Length: 627
Image 1 (spheres, rainbow, N blue to C red):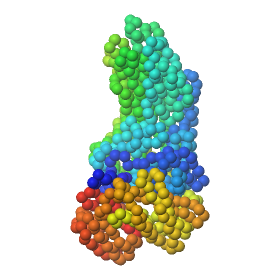
Image 2 (image 1 turned 45 degrees about the vertical axis):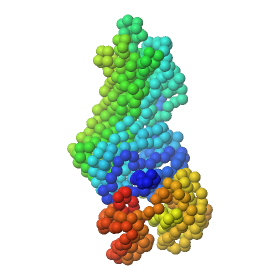
Image 3 (image 1 turned 180 degrees about the vertical axis):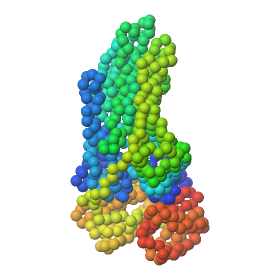
């Protein structure tokens, strides 16, 4: 988790200690990166970026797609023929970062296929944690996102909602306008996205087949698109299937509609229901709804794209106090201007998945409803195809029964309505979702054969006038030959500015380097690299420091310490809270005025790492010390 502070026009980031007692969270707390290659023997993940990831982080490996589907040119198109590795996931931990390669501490339990869009997501760690503002996730963008995950060894208290509605698989795109070419009774199961007679299918756990992106056949749990003349898109699916899209434009006269004798046309087929079980233990995003077919842009009309599916919420905690707030993970209505006018409506997105490994709940609401199909209106008196409703999602808990303290909403999304006659004109609501029990989050405890014999205890930056001081402490580093200190102004392009030989101390060693050339700008990044005797390299960490403010809050010495520590406050301090690594509050000290000194007797403290939370009028920051 990152805290953002602004002072004197300078922006700087301070990494917060995530295991601190009563941590407060809101917004997006996870970092995401796409996995492009996997070496399971080590195991090592090659990723597109390591920004936001650090050695020692707990992480989620999850495959978002990869299922194969039937390509038959009939209504079986899009039926799943094999799930393959789609939906596989597990918790693990980062052992090392080398360039764009992330070495895991434990062997992978499950198989993954990078072509099926595997992503790595950080898992923030807390003791007790309070949700103080809406907690959410990065939206799925075709490579990463859609997942909110965290762990709390204590209690999660909700003083606000958790909401990942509409952050899952994306709705189908509207077709190109086909004014003047409106055949009735179309029957296009699958076609290319350039076909003006067929709208796009919703995104799903199966990747689109080139040349088959549009048409009324579903795409696994993605809804099928509408067809000419103006049929609606099908709803996305997840635990439950989505509803069919509405019928073609019909009017008894020949005012741009189809005479009923031509038939009702083929609205998009709803996305299918996916298979969930404790034996398979897979997690899926809600499917996107199919788009409605359009041909009236020239008259100011428009169809609407399909709605997005819900995301994935994955929580491990000792207890959750909901305070009647909600975990919302709904499919949503079309993101386009609603309702559709003179053209067909998009299908609603399928709801997402909420998976919780927790024994105790209190007054928690969970909403995994499907998204509603889009309504339609027409000024010429035609009934046009509304969108089908999205299928309901899944609430999955680790207990043997769903607690009576959880109130769940699992309804399917409603079918859209044609405003001319105020009825659904053939559109069908999504089916209701459901609940499962017995969830066990997969996590490996088999150490990798490539596990490293080193541990970064501490890495911090401080500033003295125009000089930057980098201090770090390493334990058990027999393989280290030397360290490189690298500097960057943007966090991307680094240059090596110093090399420091490694100590042969077998327990721990402390190091310090002073950069005399800290430029007068908003901030600098420093990166620490370890080079082993065999040539191996390890990124130990990257830190940022605000160099436009030369005033430092305080210094704490020595580090490591034994019987006492000395705290010198350069500026006024409101409080100092000291925690052990389990998040237990050890001691609290009150105000310190600027340029004051405090000595603390630590001879009764156990050996280990201690976290100092320092608070002043600007906010707070953390220091880590070793005894």
